Length: 216
Image (cartoon, rainbow, N blue to C red; front, side, top):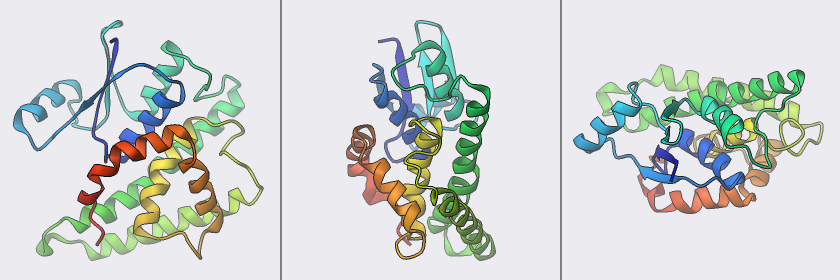
């Protein structure tokens, strides 16, 4: 098999790429990364020196691709399918990339800060930073709620890169700061995303690992 995705089923950024692969039914090997295993960690760091998941290895082209948005760009270029993640039209392309960055930077980043603080020992917790992250996340959700008021189904016309980014970001954001009663349009968008077969498959694969997600 040409493609191998080195990932973990619980990792939100891995979901982003998995959704894209499943949407276009691209054949690949799903390689479980265990950073807690010294040998596994060493092997992964050879692929991704910064230690960031996921990493896509393409043996046919002798390429290793990291960073989720770049991986989906790579799939558009070399393994195209019925869904094009970034539209060819320039003005649609930059808008799609904006929303991709929005979900990664303004939803994922504060969400991950909140989650990371939950697993720190008491003496290392950052109460100020967590409060700031909750505020940043609320600002992002407020903005998204306003944008979704136009009745759109997906972020920019057809399902694409931004929606691949939105699903993991919003799924975990809802776990740390519940959407219900505050951001109904964000919640409805998340439910539309969860209904897609590609996303259902990702959630099914992650289900055995959800017990490791820190709830408080």
